[in-house]
Image 1: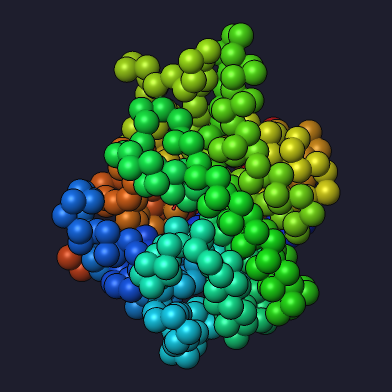
Image 2 (image 1 turned 180 degrees about the horizontal axis):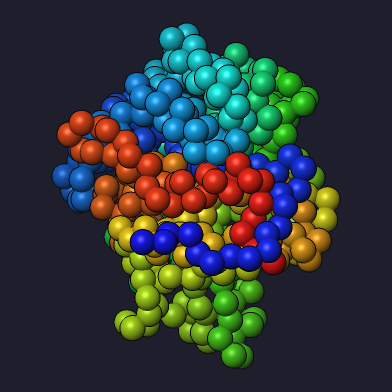
Length: 409
Ligand code: BGC
């Protein structure tokens, strides 16, 4: 079986182009017992499909994971540090966990992987959730204090730091919870909790400064989920109004940052009455999202329009939940063609990091964790032994990194 799609002329990577894969602590480390999600996973009324438990035990096996990525040809690895481990009780900072994440940073560097570190990727400590999360009194200052305590982790050798991952999804989840609604709508995102939205933006700006104070050479940004809202004929205004509080507000808040992360997987069509569910006959991925490799270029172009030319873009997540490796390669090849086209059009895209390095604890039914059934990984793993064989797509994508080219154009 030939797994490499027929590609002819290739686009060389621009200098310094980031070529990697992304993960986050809760979805791969296992036993994140002091986090809000761990508690939720073990709370029967929350009806979570399955708990994360050991995940793929990357907390103990990170060296193996980094070895694989480096051997495959990747030069960048995005991972997150876990607030619930670093500050498991309010004001108590674990020196052991800080040392653990510092070892990861150094482990990446010695393997030739540039570490991109996310400070907050969806999970918060239980004590912070109990205070009321980001809208509690003093919450932004508490988050900033945690970030300052991360100085020994990120102070040297870390090129990129992301403050908060997908604030739009966090604000949407808060909106859902505050209104007592169950589950996501069949299409689109719930209306965000506006207080959470403002708090997250304030937290981003505050910690952006805090990271620069730790080391002014670190490039700081945040990573934004892009749902690629597409207006059906006549619904342009409805679409713009729908998108503004769910996406644009967070993209605009990145103006002046060192970079912005673009994360996209699929699209959402909007009609006169709002989001339109994906038609029954559309090709779907294991998360139920429409198969739509062009999503990433739409996302890049929309982001660039809003931030302007002075904010470089990095694709920090893009990929597909599938059990079919040829389909994963086709999806990524389509997405990379689109990235190459954006570069050709002069858009300042500085990197592509696939989601995800490993199969991980994922979404089901839109945006609620968790299941291990939605396999996004370039590297799979055995549920009993944790043995991790790279999938064919990993060899293909990593190989492009070794050649320093994007597939076509
Ligand atoms: C999130 C990841 C998630 C991925 C794929 C993004 O929204 O940042 O945590 O696993 O999408 O579902």
